[in-house]
Image (cartoon, rainbow over all chains, first blue to last red; front, side, top):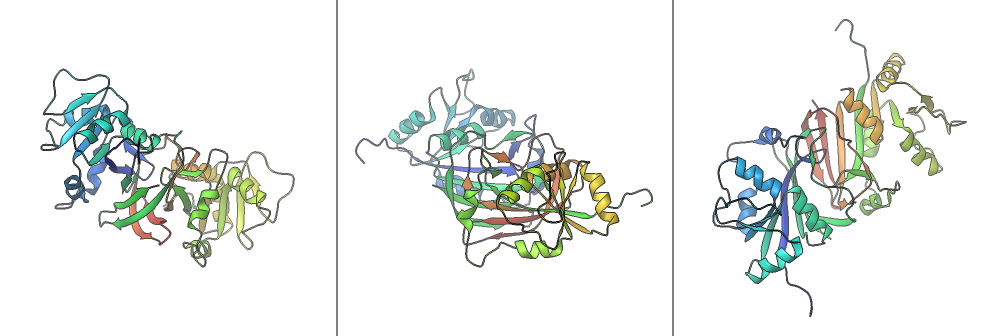
Length: 179
Length: 179
């Protein structure tokens, strides 16, 4: 359509407790290990293979940075933050701009599929109407409190279930198209 | 165990949006109809056949009352509320007491399996450690805002996945044992 800004396809692939938290009150992710199984990555590598770039928030970036490694070698990583760190870990870039303008920039670089990660970025993608696909892995736990995946205040979005799978660990993974 | 108060087994069977709401900001449940399919009750009748009694909150009761019918004929229904209405619709009873003392009363009446319904009552059952089973039907929608199924502030509970099924409507129903 004339006048439509090109943007990459945006997918979220995220684990949450059944009560909708992506981390505990102090950022704890120990509960994710309850579903660790030798040789089972719950489709993570396959998902990563389809994406050209990641857009992550500062919270997610700090969790990754604190782990002392870098998981994203070979992928374009853009971090949405107004407080860029003194130096990057690898070749990631930092952007203090709206998600949609960052997506337009990535499209102009030839990025066709973006993995949006982190609660803030996923909610921003939903709010901007640019989230195309959502894969949620429900971890079999109720955390009771923590950092929510979804914040209130977004508008209603219909989802179309593409696939749902239950794993022996009790993880239920549902893949939706948004809209 | 000596000194242990007997209580009925407690199950929740509830539908929620993927972002964890059981109703919209003004109590809207129109979005539930997106999964209405002729002849498909998503296991509701089978679940009801296993329960001896229902414990519901005042919010749920008011929704049912506003529908102008009574769905619970033949079941013992106890409503937890400190504001009992002037008259019952059928033979339901009203109780301004903690959930656990109501459950002890029901046990003494011979009730073995209670369906706890409504966000407030389900959260109370979780907080009191008396919720034994949780069936969530994820409706394929993000509401963005509304009445949450789970409130913050509860303690962590492990879940054991018993079964998960995806239906052609896009509803994903997962049944968990709590603890």
